[in-house]
Length: 96
Image (cartoon, rainbow, N blue to C red):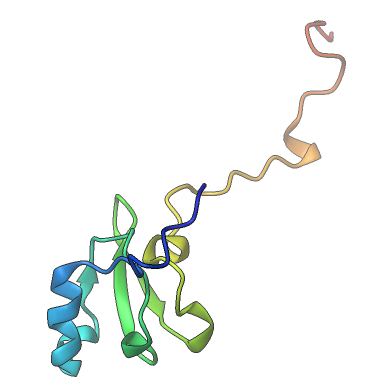
């Protein structure tokens, strides 16, 4: 995926700029904009990021600045396919 042009700057939704003015609004605020970049004003805040089904709580730290909100709210669940769940025998062959 190509990077965004440097002269454009990082993308942040307009409502997130308005939230930065009131620090109390940021805490436990639901964010639907997964494409917005995390700015340094969000550090040490806990936000709820929407993953398509339910909001996921995420604590913003220094290491997350510059990334997108959507990177920290996974949309798919991991399905564990261990060897105990697999059928014995070769694929396509009926075992008796």
